[in-house]
Image 1: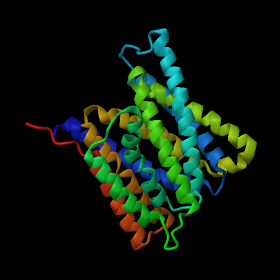
Image 2: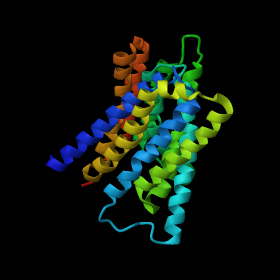
Image 3: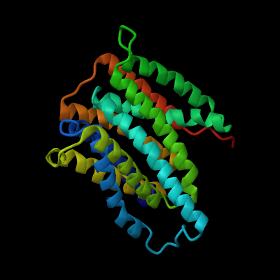
Image 4: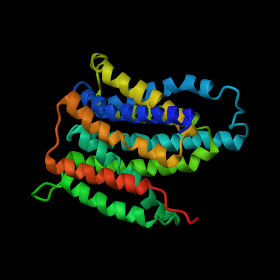
Length: 295
C-alpha cells in the first residue's frame, strides 16, 4: 500500500470513529436541550467550521462556480441537501431519545443498503449481492428491533425513517455533487439544516441560553468534530482511496457507536441484539463488495 493511500485510510478510519462517538454526543445532548435545538446549533457551528476549509482546500484550484448555472446548482443543491439533512437528522435525534446509541448507529447505517434499492426508481438495477444483503439485513433488523411480542420500539421506528431519509439525502448529494464543489455544497447544507431546525426550536422548544451552554460539550463535539472535522477528513481521505475501501472503512461507524455507547454511557445490548448487529454489519459489507469483473 502506498504511503498516501495508508494515510488516507487512517483519515477515513478517524472519520468513522468521530461519527460513531457522535451518537454518544447526540444522546448526551438530550439531557439539556431538545432535538431541534441540538441540531440547529450543531449544524450552524458545522457550517462556520467549513468556511475556512473552503479556502484551504480550494487554494490554487479554479473555481467551479464560474457560470450562473453552476452557481445556481450550488445554491439549489445546498438548499435541497440541507432540507433532507434537517428532516433526517430530526428523526434521528428524536429516535435517539428512546433507543440506545448502538442500535441507532446500526439502524442508521441501513441507508447504505437503501440507496441502491431506491435507485430502482431511476432505472438502476442492483446486483444480486445487494438483494442478498437486504435479506440478511432484514433478519438482522428482526433480531435487533423486533421484540418477542412482535412489536418495534418507538425509537427504533424513528431511526428507521431516518435511515430512509438519509438514503434519499445521499441520492440528492449524488445528483448535485458533480455540479458543485463538495465542501461549499456541504457548508450551504449545514446552514440550511441549522436554520430549518431553528424554526422548530423556536416553535416547539423555546430553549434558555443556560440550557444551550450546559450542553456545550456534546454540541461542540457534534458541530466541530462530526460536521466540520470529520467531513473534511472524508473529503481529503477519499482522494487517494478506492471508493469501495472507503465505504467499508466508513461503515465501521456503526461498530464504533456500540463500543462508544458501552464505554461512555454504559449501555449494553443483549445477545439477541448483538447477533442482529452482526448480521446488519455483514449485510452492509456484502452490499459494498464490487462485482467480479471478467478477465
